[in-house]
Length: 278
DNA sequence: AGACGATGCGGAC
DNA sequence: TCCGCCTCGTCTT
Image (spheres, helix red, strand yellow):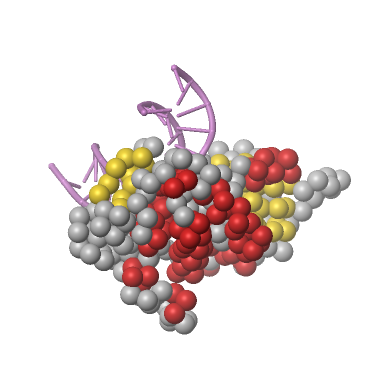
């Protein structure tokens, strides 16, 4: 699941259902050793930055410095939202359970789930480029993102996955963004025009926003003009697996029907259409 | 029942 | 550049 859209979706859900309440924090599986330090505090805020999630908890006793929990889902991490009778028994390996009066969220399989101090949080944020899903990054930093996208001679397909350049794009959205931009992922980033780089940033924003809104990646509508922003409030039709992307994981291109090419780039599989992305 | 792969990343070499 | 970690749904036997 987890590219930036999953993290922003989780932050919005948990902000809505948990923030402002006293939260019972536990680690049924036991590997979140610091759960007891957070248990019973009030959750003040949930922040998403790229693929990173931060929870700010209120002080306990004399402690004044904010205390944060940092979560990164990695490849396998996921949240389950539980309400009512379903809330009792954790299913599978649950690293962290956040239980408020209104809902419970179970976290399993994260790469990171740790208590950090403000300096620790700042260190993580310092490694991240602008996040297409953060409004202030689009307003104030889109120029920075567009500039960074062209600052390297590495292939644009590698640059777009670099969280220090743009924070939140993962392997699926990389393929889909470059496909819709009509850009060959092997091209050196520094050879792209300003228009290309601006378009890549813009598409990153629009496609990630689709994922937040629909709770899953489904870019098929962007080919037919039925993208979420044109759809009103109609709920998205649930497509079958394998029908939700234009090139990612596809044997043939959904636009021209030609063969999709793949190459392993840094251990990640990159998909593109050599005709539509010439 | 068991194998396999996945939307990620950091560290060792 | 490769390896290891994290978990679970899906596929194969």
